[in-house]
Length: 426
Image 1: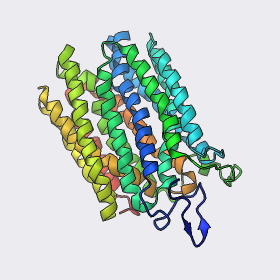
Image 2: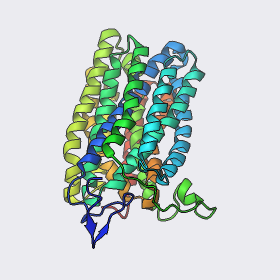
Image 3: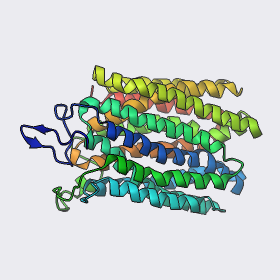
Image 4: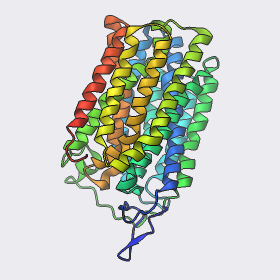
């Protein structure tokens, strides 16, 4: 750790302790680089798969029930992901090894995830797709929960907005670049699965190498008892008012985002009526607009949040932009309308993601269970990826594709309102 060896009152900061503003005099560049590269290499392939390659695979296997199949896959994945987040995040918090707390998890998670992707691409039945996605989630969360916890482990409060922006920058590149990259493999889908497996395989080892965690073999760990079990392996219950407002606010905003992006391919084919080369070009353009706007906001929003000392206001404003952008496609089926949607929502999600992780860290009930609790907050991302398609599938069945857009708008507004009620964070 770059600054963990700084001393205050002649007492060295231990490898598993979080530095305060006095101890960490410089921005933790090494941590930032590891986070950005790590998240690009797991999130890019993930959203390439669930946003483009797997929907295409499902449509090929069972075109008549593709929306229901995606909703089923997402539901099962959320259940598995929730359990995995709690258990793997909690175990990561308690891991004592010469490679630190987080590195062993993200490395082995990368290996397992890559292997599952190769099997996933060979699926020829819906049940196989659902099972592959579920196993994939087990290994993927071995990367996600520990990697996010690195922010809490190694960043003092004064740099959390900026490092949240760095994480969001990597997220934006992975999220939108991954989908644009995946569109290149629509004619050769299994090649796409192999490439995504290879990229994911690099995520943990590269991030771990850059992080260069110090040994936690001497880290004190309380023995698990019935009394402290819930603290270590369950949802927090004490001092968690703001935690749950942040959790459900995040869930609503992410649901709004994924209600549309989770069905992006089907919106373009069945609502906008695009096919062939035009479809591929629009998938690419939308992804690039979302990525570009998000990256621009990532550069500015986090550092500004640090400078003004505010976390809630940028998140609330971002939720409002997502609401407005989500409503735009309801008014036209012209292809250009999706480009307008991408620009507005890209700005909103760029601002949101830039400050979100900083807000999450400041509502944690207990620093000792950071990976577990941040994993639970991150579960809202997975929940959004599940509830978005589920709600969209229901709306499509009732009123058609144009019903998705007011649904997403309403969810974003509800999420913003929940963030307003957070008390102990400015």
